[in-house]
Image (cartoon, one colour):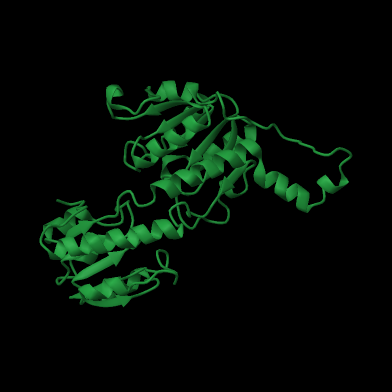
Length: 318
């Protein structure tokens, strides 16, 4: 059994061991693979491991030996799963490996915006505090979370974890979710999209990117939010209209934007959000703590074991 990993660097830049994978076949690992090299590198593989490599129907048609694709991520929109199914290729993903890490990053962005951590750290590097007449200073509003309303879009594992943390801060939590109100964890109130926009002091996105959620935060919806509200996105860049968010930041309609994702990654240097006031962007690292990546690798191995045993798990194209 030949196992080929086409873009292994993101998951394992060298701090994790792949020895356990070698027990299941001949393992070939490429740090990165350009689009034009995918077919040649995967030609003899019976099992492919990928993170962000696009596997289209045209590419899959050129890989007759392929039996299994292990997506080393939760999202699997880079694979044409219907084409894979038609060829008898099982596709699996890695669910719920980064829940704690992404929830942690969500609050890192919230707290940075409410307490202006990056702003004051930079001001003090410039000598501002050293020149101050008093023992302290502040030149921005400072926001306490207790009593504020957090609006959550999507109540999967991460959304629910974020809600738990919010309760510890004394926040009121509302959610837009397909789940029945009676089935929600205690302390979460279900509402409509309009209700969530109107109520939220902070709106945080934890939904998958679909035709129905693409650019759900846009110029129109931003106008219906509280003036000065904060927006957090640690889910998918395509959930927002980046130009509209940049414009809302410039006018002050949006008080701040904290995000770990962009519509196109890496983003173009001229992307308006990279230069917008009070926008803080991290480079898609919420998932990338060593603990989370270790769990990802463990689940990847369990997925392979289950597939080889004839009882595949975490299948996304049943």
